[in-house]
Image 1 (tube, rainbow, N blue to C red):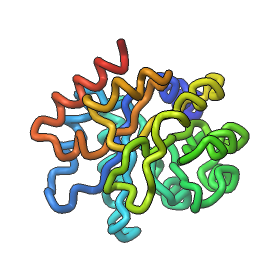
Image 2: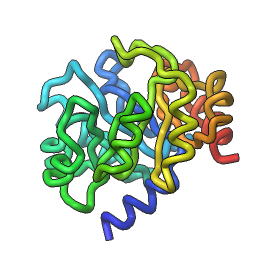
Image 3: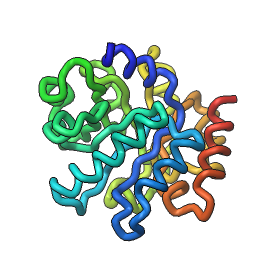
Image 4: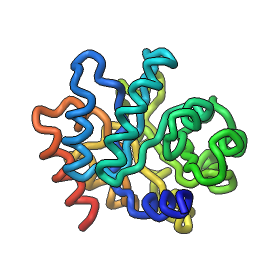
Length: 214
């Protein structure tokens, strides 16, 4: 039942927030309630500066907030920790564990996500044991240092090839950049700074969610 619910929920995920522990602001619990309440469907904890213990502590806050709002909680990179903290799944990059190996660690009921950055990697993800993939960055972004922008053509390829597999677009996604992305056939976005740095994050989430659910 858990695995079935997670995949049914994933099928209805449109707006996916990737964020850190907000350790510099100290408002993690309240921020999560704000954005999840405003329309975030899935939230990923990605914090490259945190220790394992810090990630575990933050995961408890993410888990509780996701449960309160009926959202999915995904942990970045670490399937071992994802299993320990009861995350709904793990997201792995091209330099992390292969999705099939991550699946062995998190179990069959968990969600496995995959990062892709090219047409070939999209095709690879569609042949792998992952529940969704993300493609980008469409535009260069400081959250992906050293990763060049891939433009829109890989999105058109993904739209034609995905065959029902959920997929998300990353890379400086915000209200101003979303329309050209959606014109390619994309329907789901991963957002970072447009929400985490916003003066009114609830308003940004609400506007983006309305755009995606039209």
